[in-house]
Image (cartoon, rainbow, N blue to C red; front, top):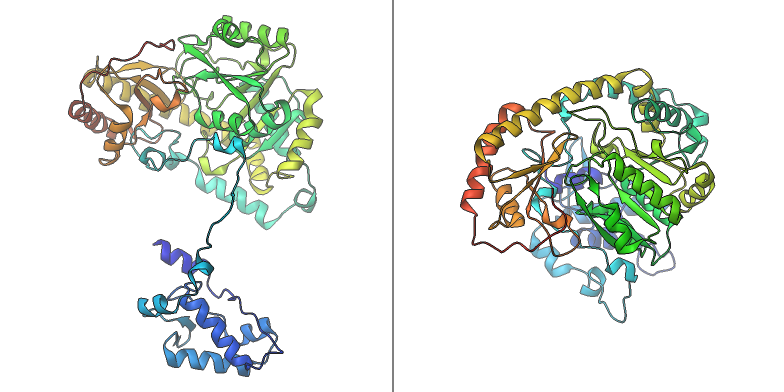
Length: 514
């Protein structure tokens, strides 16, 4: 369906804005005619769009039908409207462009003339502009954050959503709790305690619109403008944006094979107010933070009164070794804010996540939530509560864990046989992606742009670095790519690398090696 068609369908029968002056000497039917004609030639009403019936428009304008019928008759004669038997009255689909061009309102009406100072907040200037890069929008081989949507139990999910649409619980719909549905929070709490070793009860859980809102609320509540915060280097770009928008000072701390280098962080800025970490599956390098580093981080937070923001974004999928418990579950001093999301394990547009808040901070987080958007949406919380309690969620996770392990294994095998030793792999033990470092002589962004032309959605690694000492490579997702299509995708990648090798750049020295 085209954008134009969607616009028309979305605005069928919309009442055009017509201002009537009952004291004017101009007859009402002329005023209605001018109002509709102006809406048509300025494209406020699109060609082919249905206009309200004469009865509806008369009721809206609080006039009799006669002036409306007269206005419609004139517009029909002049070709601005057309009548379709049995369907209604529509803006003419054959409206000449010349009519719109010669009868447009003054330019200043359609496009205001900007003048004077137009100031925006300094913190907004610090945010990176959204780039129209292809890897953010494509779906397919190597796409990041893309689950196997074809394997999701859509029929079960639809029935659960329909159940709550047909028989809504009045108290749950009407009652506004900024923390979210208690049924859902209890289900999430039980899941986290059993599967992630999180120490919590339902009263500590706040339901949010994904991990990005979780970081935004947490930053608003805990940090002031100018506060330094440790960030993994390389790290999650959207987390950086959340902290920049709050005016925080970012302190890049290198990541190695054991996760964030806590000792380096202490040397660089021991008095940081917080640290953002992805310890179970570091983004983007995929490494798991070692036990000793976890203890170091917790000791640092306790000693300096700092907060740890643990983003546990896809810990459900560990392919090798024993499951790793959450950092929050090891914390005896309640310095960890635990963040999770259902976007990766179910589907991204669901936009449901959660924060596990230390008990003494619940009131502060609640106040912050009320200032932001008051309460999370109700419907999907109730459906998700049933999805978890009835066992569908656990079955889905088990099924996906097997599927993603298979897809990962096939991808690694194809890369080893085709691209070794061109690419150095990092962090393939967990999750739905791993990193692949490029040797000298390659530009990951340029290759990613060219890859999109052949249907490969490569995420370049270098933009994940905050400083200029960035390594080039790719963050390769495999969740949405069937195993049978992996070999061809890897062959295409191999051909791209061969075709796009340039003269050696002379890679700068760096402290983040894996």
